[in-house]
Image 1 (cartoon, rainbow, N blue to C red):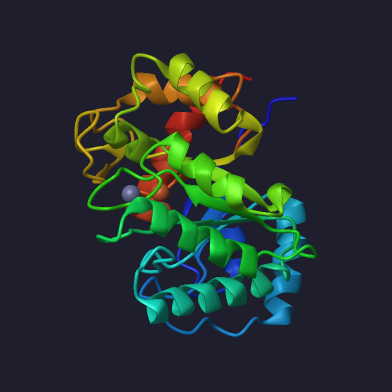
Image 2 (spheres, rainbow, N blue to C red):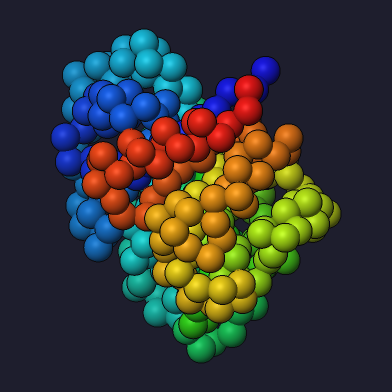
Length: 279
Ligand code: FE
Ligand code: FE
Ligand code: ZN
């Protein structure tokens, strides 16, 4: 059965139950949030009462899945050992906390190799993943598709596949596709969505695709820029998003709006997308 899972990026400052409540109010049935300050500070302590309330609300509002986002400042591919160590410890701590809300998704930016080459960068990312992912965890860790600015790793499906190939616990790793990023990376989701998905399937496998960041782009295909735009106001355009949310291979995957917006703005975007979703 088709079920439109749509949500947006929310502030986690008031806790999980609040995010469930806000989501429901704006017509969403899922949400994304930063596990801690994006600059990578200490995470707030888990409040068990908040978690309990969250589970009640999630049940009531039909929230089946949520997506946690690691601080975007982490760099698992850094040549600096201390930076990698910090990324590893942060991710390990995040994954422990994720088990308070089991069976959900944890997304991170693979990292930038900044000079020492992508092969070494990819090796470092794999090392960290194999250290932080545990057999017992119920969370699936997602590699985000990147726009390929600077020395970003994850600019194409081959690089993501190379990382996945190195991860031992294969059922705990997946991919989050960011529409702005893949456009900027050079994948033509505007004119050739089927072709892009076929390529994804051939290289990575569509069974690994667990979440979609639905962002328009300020830049044309292949710009390697990563500048998000509100839905329908960028170069990707509303027609493309209509095809994306209704594509038979994508329509059951959760979608997350993450281009900064006011809550009312997100609410409107969600309504527009809901009206375009064909049941
Ligand atoms: Fe991201
Ligand atoms: Fe994203
Ligand atoms: Zn981005």
